[in-house]
Amino acid sequence: VKIGAPKEIFPGENRVAMTPDSAVQLQKLGYECVIETGAGAAAGFSDEAYTAQGVTIAKTGAALFKEVDIVAKVRPPSEAEAKRLRKGQLLISFFYPAANEALMELAKDKGASVIAMDMVPRISRAQKMDALSSMANIAGYRAVIEAGNNFGRFFTGQITAAGKVPPAKVLVVGAGVAGLAAIGTSTSLGAITYAFDVRPEVAEQVESMGAEFVFLDFEEEQQDGAATGGYASVSSPEFAAAQLAKFRELAPDMDIVITTALIPNREAPELWTKDMVEAMKPGSVIVDLAAERGGNCKLTVKDEKIVTDNGVTIIGYTDFPSRMAAQSSTLYATNIRHLMTDLTPEKDGQTNHNMEDDVIRGATITHAGEITFPPPPPKVA
Ligand code: NAD
Image 1 (cartoon, protein in one colour):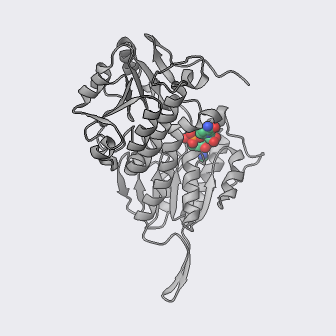
Image 2 (cartoon, helix red, strand yellow):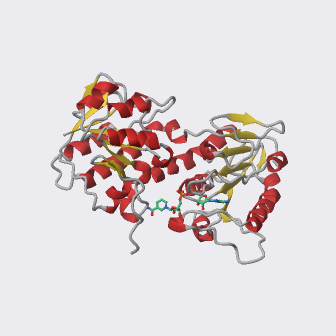
Image 3 (tube, helix red, strand yellow):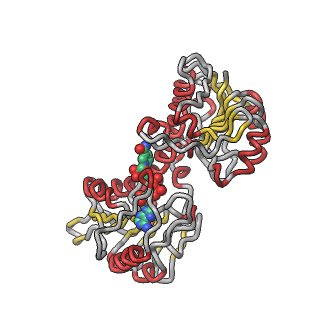
């Protein structure tokens, strides 16, 4: 049985779903590995690096899709790619089925099975396959690096012969996977780091990383903004107002603001308003990791870096993992390899698509000629 990774065709996408190292592990599971020529080039993996590990090369994407039984990709397939799928073939990639229904229908009509990496249940057992988390971790790290690159000062405070330098002040809004990675990166670079989340249970985590949790001046007990599975719910108008008031107070003092706030299946909440941007010092930087979903900052332009009239840089890039393609490909390919391990219990190169397995079931969106999305709700433990 052959598994192969094509070259990603989405503009600017540098990642690849199989690395020479992951290919070695996949071969240990009994699979033959194939890549499209040049598939790893943008992530720093040459064809030679793959062939040295026993991987064979397909000349084109079309040839690869034809040759292999299992296609591993990063981005959801294009329509043309989905049309290449065939009966019994398995596609593993990010898919975002709720937003890509026509594509899912197409894959089903072709008779292919699809495992959507973004649908892997976020339970402990599946952490090793959780590509949303591995990519969010990179995005959070890179957001701080990108901010630093656009910030004309040090993160850490210094007392030097040439003068005293104050430490930078960084505010991270949203302390999920990406936010926590940003907090860790920011504190390790020496910035004074503040963080806020609507889920009060993260305060302890934030503080354990050396950052200060921002509590609101809210009349009642701080609202618990947690919904199911550790995700946030929409805030009440009173809570949202208290949050904005707090941010307004902080804005003039912050050098860098990194926003990561998301609520499942909704546009990103608007948390950093125009007047807050206007209140910031010239030279300050905002990185809006929610840009893909409309942005947490009112002025964010998706995929762009802009500088406001008052000299604040706002970065709305949506391709942070791709900007660290060697690292992100390595982690993503490892997520896929772990998934393949679960799909290959006998390590004999034979895929057992076990729909009784909660993780496999949850991530499978088409199988045996049927749409299997959305999955049944998780069994209550
Ligand atoms: P996410 O990307 O959906 O949201 C990012 C953060 O924004 C969340 O922490 C959310 O609470 C916060 N947020 C929403 N509205 C906000 C607002 N108005 N102001 C400030 N912050 C706001 O979240 P995620 O990173 O995918 O993580 C969600 C949860 O899933 C976390 O609790 C995480 O620990 C959990 N998780 C568990 C596992 C696992 O057990 N395998 C894996 C990954 C994540």
